Image (cartoon, rainbow, N blue to C red):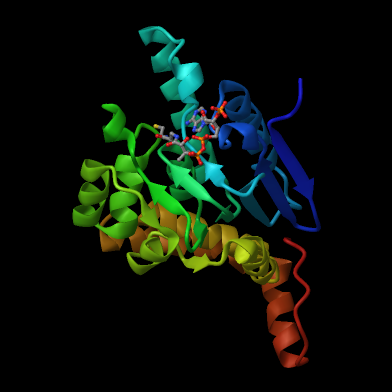
Length: 259
Ligand code: COA
């Protein structure tokens, strides 16, 4: 069976590539299972500092649920399939390391939900992005109704979901749906550049910051500040913190080891 997900391991940065370009990289059961297995491995890998999610081909990052598979399913199977997409995409958001989605082509439905579960998004300026599920008489079922409002605001999220419209990468950037919208051929470079910048910083600090931001967003400011303080504690006893101070004093670049 050919792999529908390719993992390329570099120093500190792992790139996962959705590899079904013949089916617009739609999320088949096999692809989801492979993605889930990779998430389980990566969450415990202390050497990995940043994960980049991208796709093969030139047209689509991911066209969402595999609709050809879906049409063959009975209601029970559909429920299982929706659960698998939801769980897998949630696993992406729960990774301790930052995830950068290099969406080098269109992302619809579950494809955009995968991007929303990532920490940072780089889109292709002319490609189309949208939560188009209501046009298929279903709703976003992999976190879209929950994550989109916290990224672009409730009103804009309702507009996008109710109308099922597809917007360009450029428009997505204007509403804060992605951090960068660049020409197609620059998407990968931009994601690599961000990954390299992140990987230079203290890895324990990066994970503590991600945890504090993600866990605090929906709480009161007091509860959020407590989470921030707890997360800060994790950095105090690290060698990396001392390395940062020493490097500053010695006017050199710090060399963080993740300890
Ligand atoms: N599931 C399964 N296969 C899909 C797919 C999906 N979600 N999206 C596209 N494909 C397949 C097409 O069926 C086609 O396969 P074929 O050559 O065997 O017919 C192949 O990918 C290429 O797609 P095609 O439609 O020919 O390319 P296009 O550039 O004209 O359009 C899309 C691409 C993605 C815009 C269009 O296929 C589309 O709208 N797909 C549905 C996306 C969607 O609604 N997703 C939300 C799901 S909740």
